[in-house]
Length: 118
Image (tube, rainbow, N blue to C red; front, side):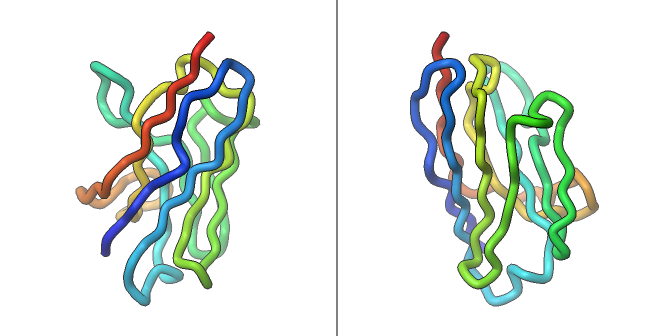
């Protein structure tokens, strides 16, 4: 499976961005997906996950601000990010989940940079 994240950019505090992650392969609809992020000097951290039946799970730090969704027809998972804060600045990655709701496979595609300025 190849994963390509896109949609990052630079915004001011309170702004919004929508990330996309396109996955290759024909089995996308059969596995849970998630977004993780890695800020400078920190470990990669779970952000949000979505199961095959569209059940969602979020890190406490993004609840109420971020929304994860998926379009199986397009093999794509999305992350709508609203009310962005400087602490959301990170490289964002999508991945398959090995164990619901937040244990990933150790495979990371190219991430996308999100920078939030105050």
